[in-house]
Image (tube, rainbow, N blue to C red; front, side, top):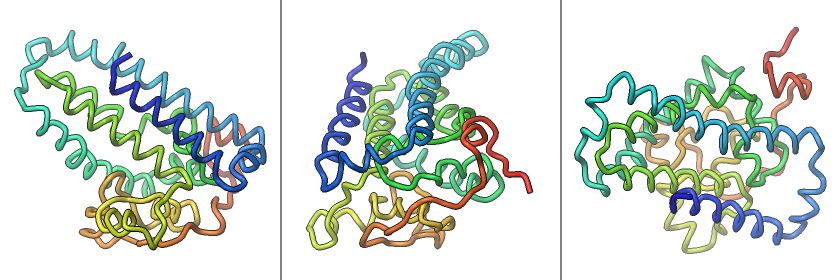
Length: 247
């Protein structure tokens, strides 16, 4: 297992353990319905197994067959490729996320049906909705082009680790130095939690808050919202397979 993947796996279990240690942490997990567990675990399987396998086994090999001359043709130092992933791709994701909240809301709204924050909820989506997130396509292409993709891979891993953290209840205390240091530029768990609490027009960035500040979509959160989850008439099977509400 590559060290970057191992870092994500370790972060996942550390966050799960830390979340369970919170007051009522274990109780919150037990209170999740069977449908919620299935949705989250199916999403985890898609994003953690199916999509990586597709990236390596189909997309990468397809590029290798179609454009063999471009493999490893981009000579960029690892620190710069890290910044390309963590900053530039993050900006592209900002617009991808805004698109999912406007034109393609039906493809994304299942993610906002979570009623409590935990690490597993980061993967909640319909089975095929994740294929409309640009990470699937752009990461494979950039890794294929880079002569040394190590820095870019660390950018992917850090983004994934922050995404797991953002979907937890482990945000820094508003009175802490960590909050004062991170809040101006990083999307925190309490910032991210605003959107499942019916705020669909703010905090679209994945890593950096600067994009939302730049485009007027930032909404700072000091505390976690008391209630999460949008109202929907979707059944479990609709959420999983066909997230379109009928009138």
